[in-house]
Image (cartoon, rainbow, N blue to C red):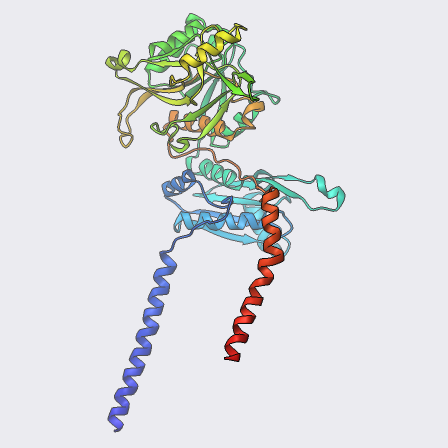
Length: 487
């Protein structure tokens, strides 16, 4: 009997140990291999695909030190965002949270190490001995107008991911990429009050610096300039400037051209035409119905990005508005195929638009007739050109690249602040031209208040639900219980 009890005891003990071992193994496996989903309505902390792909390219350890006061309006947002970075980094990111108001000695030690001279809440990114600070003011737009009425500051746009990923790119890549910005033909300047200031800031946040180029003063485009940007020149390039541009192209140069259809630039257009993209002498228009029998003509183009190119792959089927005049592009891939040049569309106008050659006319009858005749034609307004390289995106081969769009107004501040998609397209274009397909700018997360409206019929139904059905439910339950007890 004693031997039997000992056996039973050992059996029970072995079972307990086995259960504890299995529980520990399951917890250990779940701790290392788990998934996270964001089911929130606006996905405030969900990282973009570009950030996730960039984190996979990091080879060393990224250390993030958080100096955020609890009183900062975005403290909780930053903490939640960094948790997503830590998860996506898969062990490559270490985070230390320090409250400067409570842990003074540790805060002073790190302030001296990183030479922090501001009292503002901030992050310090440290990678292989290089460090960069990201301030709270760079991570959010805060509206403080309500403080005069006793209200707290309100976050209007959270830009945490954009600021943190930009800082990480700076550290990992080290030296900034140089983008040559062509001037001298009445292009928008890069001064403080520039009409392209938003675009400039957005591109610079991707570890890219602008270098102004006046081609008349150069013997060749500088070697450090990897991509040339041409935005809306109002005057044509000279023969000497075109030679510099062609030489740059032949030496595997990268060029972004945004053409103003109203400007007379035959030499620049001829260069683009040589590469299989013809800018047509027309304007895209569409008639929109404003009443039962009233039509209005608009030249602002609603267009759709195509997903076949790495430039617009992440923007597939996204719509954007191109304000001002826009011409159609004719792509001629067969004509330039022998020169090993490939051309593909990037942007199509939505259905219903037509390309009007007589765009200065006021004859509404003629315009409506042209619209009926040509509204089913597929119109291209943006294209990508590549010479050399490989059609297989997995094969990286040096090549000449060009992106051309027949509209130069959509990147200006008054237009691009209304349409984030335009910024994302330019970012994708620049990064493709720089052979950095894995990187792109990240749009800020703008809080969207949850609103709903009820018409008269919906209010009537809601009234019946509140006054009749809700009180009826406990009455029915009580009646059922009373009947069961009675029986």
